[in-house]
Image (cartoon, rainbow, N blue to C red; front, side):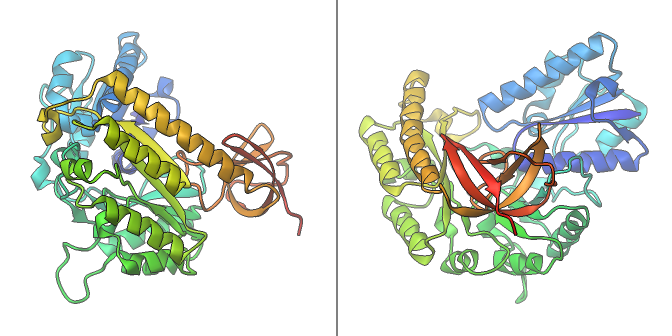
Length: 442
């Protein structure tokens, strides 16, 4: 059976999709890169917020049309939206042959083997979910980086978030399993390992014993792997970022001096309503501490606007904080009213038009900051990892940039450059968010 897995959602979901690939290959099925050549398609869905759910449904409908047109034998849904709303998907989409929740690799493989149709979602209760993995990963791309999942689930209970209800309680992945997969990725050309989870700072807490690993233990073990040049640690929970972790990220090792801190807001009352366990003062102290520790530290954050009850004054406090802090990288989301979350039932829900206006205002502020920071890089020499070659141009990133969400460096005349090269590049031009460079000879 020829099959294609369509990836949607976050990098953690992408890793789960790679395990689906590996499981089906183990059964003797053949992966294809073009869905038009597939007998069976699995859409690995996202169910985090409304736009992600809508995208997942639209993709299922698109591939459902392929089935109606006779190009496809079977169509399955997997991943977070299946875990959350699989029965509804099956009821509303007759073209769908099955919906499989998180961890249902064996059941999905059985369905594909028999090309069978299921009337019920196959899933495990979120509270019973274990860590999802399957032998070695399937590697579907030639990028020099790979996402490496170190834990799953979350215990925090942020009032706006539905993830614990889908992915269950926090559970660390065993250290030896992470190291084994990291070595496999390095052996297959991955030079940057991007560690993903719901919360990296909590890694290892659920292991018992005097020698239980923590996040620094893990980073030190990964540092030893030959072929790995960069390690990027994502999703640091602000309330749990210790001085030891700050010291380690700022020190001379393979883990990049890149702090991914989703603050979500800065007003103490809003943070209390979100159940983030930090205050205005905590956040400002943390930003100051990181920048005092290292002038080269890169701070990336995200914020949510339009949380229930957010007043104009509270929003303005956030806007002023962003102007003052000058974050290196920043994303903003409008609050999404998700079923089965405490915030969905809170009073004073904000109108969508107001949420969008607030988002736009923050992104304009950040745009000016980003352009100013980019212009400061002119004539500087940056170490760049090459991710792709497109139309005789090389596309790369500095240590300050995570794939898919941050900036790129474009290099013309890329004849002698290969994917995975790490080059010293002089920044010769800036156009808004785009950086242009030339390789420094010698």
